[in-house]
Each structure stands twice: as C-alpha cells, then as structure tokens.
Length: 130
Length: 231
Image 1 (tube, rainbow over the protein chains, first blue to last red):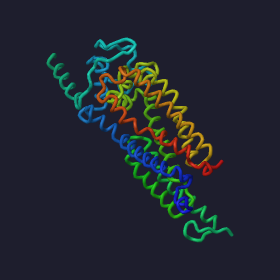
Image 2: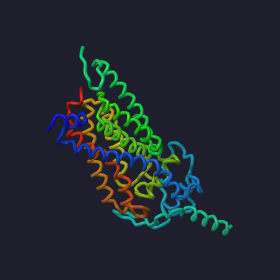
Image 3: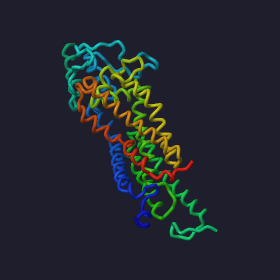
Image 4: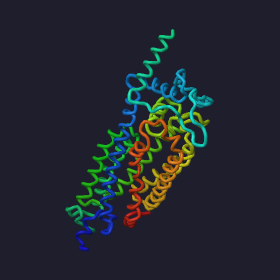
C-alpha cells in the first residue's frame, strides 16, 4: 500500500475498509434524500387522498370515525376537552367485525376521493329523508 | 515555532487549528439548521438544501487540508439525529397529543393508508392513541430510551467524543432489536394491521425502509479507526 493512496482516504478510514465506507456513504445519502421526500410529501398527499381541500381536516377526521364505528352519526369533536376520556372509549361498531385472538375489521379500503362522494351521498340521503 | 503545510500555506499550528475550528463551525451552522427542519418531516424540503450546503462547506474545508470532521462521521451523526427526531415526533404525537385535530387526521390517515394499528379502534385505550397489540409498549420503551439516547449519542459523536462513538454503537444495535421486534409484531398481528388498508405491507415497507440509517452506521462504527475520537 503506497503512502499516497492512504493519504487520500478520509480520516478514520483505513485501506481495507475504504470501499465499504464509500458504499455506506452512498447508502446514507440515499436514505437522507428518501427520508426528506417522504417526510415532506406524506401529509400533503394523505390529505389529498382523503379529500382535502374539498373537505376540511375536521370533516376528514369525522369520516374516519364513521368508518371505524360503521356509524354515520359519529362526528369528530374538536377542540377535544383537555384530560377528557379517550374519544373512542366504550364505543362499539354497528358493523359486526371478526372477533377472536386475531380480530379483523370488515370495512373496505378507502379509494381516492371516496370521502367526498360518501359525504355528498350521505347529505343527499339526509336531505331526502327530511 | 511549529509549522505545517497542510492547507498549502505555511501557517502556525495554532492558526491552522483556529481556521479548522471556524470552518467546522461554519459548516455545522448550516448542517444543524438543515437537520432541524428535516427532523420535523413536513418542513424537510426547506432543510435539505441547507444541509447540503453545510455538507459542501465540510467537503471544501477537508479538501483544502483543514482538520475538520470526516464526511462519514458528519453524515451518520446528523442522520441518526434526524431519524430519531422523525420517529419521536410521530410517536410523541400519538402518545401525548392524540386528541389534537392534526394528530387525529394525520395518524388515522397514515393508519388507514399503511397500518391499521393507527386506525382501527384509535383512541380507545385509556392512554389514547394507537391500540394495536404491543404498539403502545414500543412507544413507551423506545421514545425515552432509544431515541432520546440516540440523539444524545449523535451529538457526542459529532463532537468526536469517544463516548459518542460508543453510545452510538449501543443505540444503533438497539435499532436492530427494534426492527426485528416491530416487524415480528406486525407479521404476527397482520390481520389487525393490514385489513382494509389502502396500501398494505409493500406500502409500509416502502415507507419504513429508509429508516435503516442505524444499520448503515453499524459497519462504519465498528471499522472506523477509533483513534480519531477523543475523551
């Protein structure tokens, strides 16, 4: 090993590990970029999927509760009382989920923009009923 | 008088040390600001250019021969801090702020999209937040122990302290335990976590794969020349 090749290595990196350290550095840069992109875009993209900006955040929250408990009357309470009981305490789903050691919910996956159509349909139903 | 020609100019040792210290601080200011924003997740795009600017300053200082921190130590140190911050934010929201509108929408949306542990029966436990089997126990164990400790270790590591290097090894190995335990939990309770989910399993993996920074750090931490760290 010539002295000049050792000189070019970063501080702390010895020749046997030079190649490994180089690849680790590349991996770290990829992870950094990926974490930043994920972090920056997750919330906006999730919000779009679930109907924002047509629906407000509180309306999206309410749609979630309606699915969880299969109950169209559930509304997301906001602001929630500080130190109040857990929002979902004691609530039971109107839908019969699968219970046992491996419980399983029976609601369906939510499609893109589905909350908007669900809400419109529900409001139309309610208007027709009145 | 002690002289050297490290930076291409004949300067005194003290001058060289002072210049190195200044160059390091200059780079660190950008790196710290960048990491701060990247650690918040949503403001990450503001942080990335700041961080890269700091990295460029660091490389430049190294190229002109100043005694600054190696790039790998810089990258690993800041990245494990960002990784720990991202994990801490989400889980702290779930544990403490689980009835805020932002947490309910963001965490339940995340749950409905990738992991129903954050959706089905959300906010039904007395402690609130996620109710999937074991999930709260992970949060209680990992937030104050692993992630806080890893951030402290990351700071010591960036200061090139021996304890920083040692504790980063410890907390990065904690990361292996976390991954094995967490993935096993999600597999065993797969019915709870993936039923009715928009983008199950692969979606979760695509999202969480990039939290492997502690794993990338482990081989480096064990093969770096330890003499570069001081008491």
